[in-house]
Image (cartoon, rainbow, N blue to C red; front, side, top):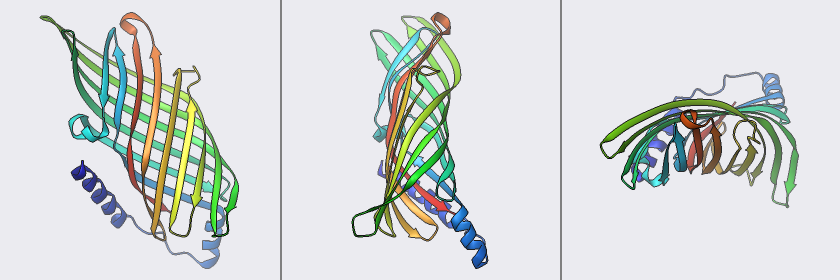
Length: 264
């Protein structure tokens, strides 16, 4: 686990060194940019543990993996977050997560070898209600309302063996869930801040229910760069079809987050 975290930090630091700084601008252009438009780009790693029940075409498997076992079941992952903020009041955010996972389990003479890849993309617009002073030490807090959609793609492969009979199934499903949420950003001083974000969605439109929550601490070590660390959890309850067309996923994905935020 320590080795994995060290590698993640090294990759993110390399990204920071390779990322070009903002182009020079005149004082007037700089003021206009600061007042009107801000772009935030965050490459990050989500060390994802997962637990729950997955099923396809009549087969089911219960999976429970702690994020500390990531070297055993995570084959590949890629994550990124981007925001565009206009006049510190309205904006758009996009977040992309991809992971390819594998797991094995057995019970009562049935062996199930499950492999799953998932893509989760969040798109949302937000409105900032305002910035509020906290106490007498210069601390401030902003509060945003979010509304958008979460786009899922799950690709599931289950290989089953019962006695001397074997079978395997492969199904892929994509769907879109409406989402709503809120976010607060608490700035303690020029260097340190915290971010809390949460939301719910689905409402039976596609998934029965989906939710997410995240807590981050950030340290601004350069004018345009901030290192981030925290924890994120996402829940999903989805089922479609019946019999040979049945597809279900009732799971929670959770684990630490580490990343770098670049502001332009």
